[in-house]
Length: 367
Image (cartoon, rainbow, N blue to C red; front, top):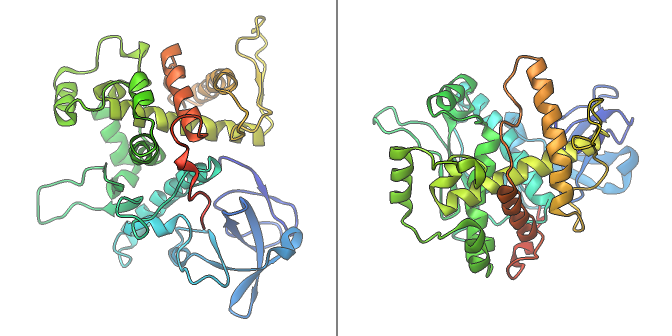
């Protein structure tokens, strides 16, 4: 459960982003990305018609990948497309005859769809590899048993590779602990790697290089050397004063991608908080420093970085406390310095077109 709460248009029962059937009225459900809504559906001559509150929404078909239980997004019934606005970015998917790999792919798609959802809510461009040689694409790959090489998660000119094994919870946790990371999730991978792609489109190609370098540093420093230095010497001293994570200090590109990922973490969780009507008002908080009412639309053009940070700090503190009560690690094991909040402010202004030439708004919400 996350992000916006939805209700079944047929019976008004609360439903969630990945639901495919309403548990109360048993109508088929599908997510319609263009209008950001869940539709209740009834079969109609080999296709689906919208019923209930959105009975005027017309006829729809499910994404082709719904056949494998990895997608519930809808496509207009008269469209020639077979893949939805999220799945059309896939370049390589696992062997569909391998049940275990399809199960891992399903977890991948849940995370990827959630990342795409946030990009759409922010009005960001989503261009496929078919539309542009450097468009956004995803390879979900397994290690080749014939070689000793492992698949490396990363980004290369718009093509994002995610190692399929990362969808195995035990393996991912093993990697997290071995690398000393406080946080490692599939959703975090998608949000970080797509940050590199948006750096290309919004910073490099968006007239924002000078402004970005003033905040994140010199991206022309040799990337390979910088990573070698980071892994050989460890994090920079006192990295917490300037970076959202120790890895962000390795290179300006990683600082941007890490900050981008955290911006997505924050706005998405704040939308969830608003949907649930969350108010944080600790009894011991006489000064009101840990109190907030999440009653604003975090995706609105008028929301400021100060409003976002002012709501996030109390919310994340409360969520961390809940996790500790259940014996889990902190939900958000990070501390945001004033410098980092300033970097998040840069991302906030960038995605809203207030930095650069605002070309990032083109191509948004296609589906």
